[in-house]
Image 1 (cartoon, rainbow, N blue to C red):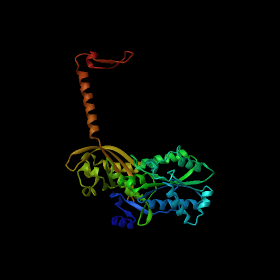
Image 2: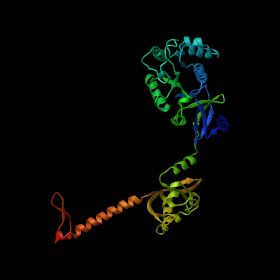
Image 3: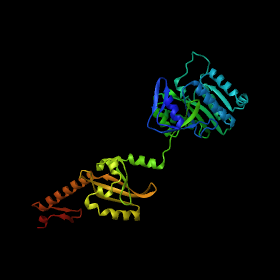
Length: 387
């Protein structure tokens, strides 16, 4: 856990290690930012929390319910059994809130999902993620409490498990269940996810899906979210992951940036590519066109053309090039996107060859050949037909 602590001290980390039932979840090569979790306010669409021990779940749920009661919201605390219900009530009673009064006025309902405090009654596994909204006494009690009276906001805690599907999928489905049963109500759910059910990839899937995810480390609940990249970094990431050859050069033709496809296309390393003049990457027939293209770019802002590019080994690559004016490092520059059109050129050549062959056969055929339209008018004919 020292690795985890060190990176959290920096406010961001490249690798997150979470111990989970003897296994370690590693999140690598992804930058994540942490923030101190506030329990006094829940985001409008709810909160997802990762817990390791039952005590952590009880602690956060108590803070979540307490904050809701302080803001006069209606609250439902779902617990596994009657023993947990008493513990939940005691946790809330230790605060300054008059819990009995809140219960009496239907502001708070603590509902055990196990109907009887009987160890012989096995709790169904599915109750960890969903409960049937149309069957069973606990479920009926929940529905009755939800639809009784007028209220502005409702808080409810729900356990989310995988059960053969991803946590992200399960969470999405559970949100749909809530929306179907409370279409006109504003709900601020607390989704609890057991750490051992969560893979490293799932963490990022949840965060990227827009979920507000918190986890307890070093005695504090903290938000986890992917650190936002700067626009320049996003731009460079987009360039690097493109399947086309991309160069950025200044208005004089000096290459400022090149992606890996461009380097592979022209046969240079990135260090050799940066600083080259764009004319070094063209065949001699296209050298004079550079100045004309820059002038056209200044007038229109973009320009598309075809040209023969020159590789380091002297071979020629036909490309369709899309040039566009951009701002790069505070200066006007050219974003040049080149696409290899070798196959297109080959197809066009094959078509021309086929047409030439057909024309030759048509003209040199010893007999007369003619094509008529439906009215009997000659559309085309060879010389022998005329004779």
